[in-house]
Image (cartoon, rainbow, N blue to C red; front, side, top):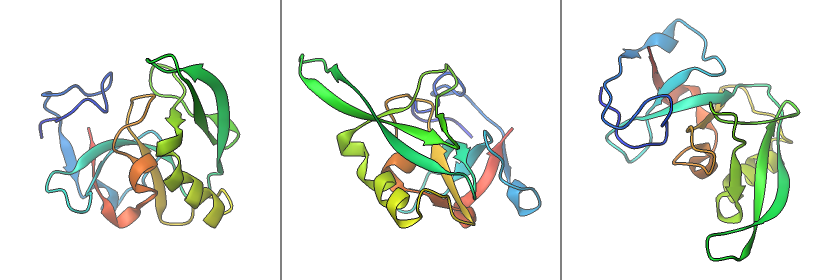
Length: 150
């Protein structure tokens, strides 16, 4: 398959060819830090994301210090904590969500008391500011993870 987009920049680049092991998870567990292929509803092309959280993991949202945006305005941000640690991308940059990207994960944090339920996974891109990932579509069902990138 050919990577389209830059959400995994640093791990898989736009236009790069990758090998997909379709059906891999039919006989293997989904593990933290796997690069998984996710069947995203309403999209004919699957998404490639990093498995950051697995069932039983504890997650929380932590308010980040205010910082200036490009227009010089102060903006709030939130970090994602997983099992007590701040989540970071492959470059070590913490994921920092702006207020508008917070609502879906905040709902899951409340509904599941901060624990990823059985059969659900937290999938993120490699962009510290976020991408089309669990920060927008929520936790992902095991049934929608269709393969692994080799």
